Image (tube, rainbow, N blue to C red; front, side):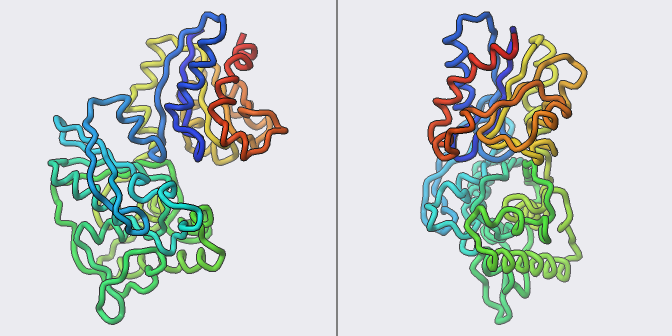
Length: 373
């Protein structure tokens, strides 16, 4: 049996690479004839650089930057010198994981550190930069990174505002332009939310970044104000652009201030790995994928849905593992999943299954093998 392992990360518990290693360990303990292949996955969020490093010959570039609340940190990106292409993961300088629980508040956070990463890559000679959008602690509409790249966001007194989410509503004027005309920036993500509104960046994601109900309302109004000032100054209107609401509005900010393109993270992964031809050439029988939580959103343009579309009518069995399962067997069978299981049984507290995710994942192959044979 030829098995392809291509799990997404289990947010807060394990990276795609760690999940793969745990599954391999479990299968290697079985007395079973299986041939294992693996692809490190990322939709542009957590594990984006791991996925890139797994596919390309790149150099790790360490440099000084700022975390989401402006503290100095050392972080990194990847650089393909030969092709003058850099790969940046937003969360490495603007990520929620860089803050303690008490520090998490998108009213007070900024993407300035990501702007510093972009600038550093430009100074190293990059002409194309892929930015993986995901895992952010921010809701600043991208004004933090835009400020580093030469823009000024001014209040009613003509003074530059602090480029954080909570000051978006104070923007009255924007000065500056994108001075790097030979630079191509591509935002990579699978988020389709607009910039603002009930399905926008603040209402959809700000709560998990530490915002209260009142703060979510303020952040949403701030994003509306940013878009209004942009449109008044330049006639640009990218608020409903697919992915505008990604990473607290960074999708919008990259598109508006850096003339960036936004692409699907899953599509990017499949092209980068030549996944379709790999599956065909290796004659894969089973694909094991998964993520921390499988729900209705999983079936709307994310990694698992992409795999199901890629393998439709091929006879390949697609199996998924997850920390939480919030759809019925009938629902997942209907879309083409052969089998779905949580990593631990239903009596295991979620907190424990997250803390010991790799242990539970390593035990799964015996169960999966019995289902598949």
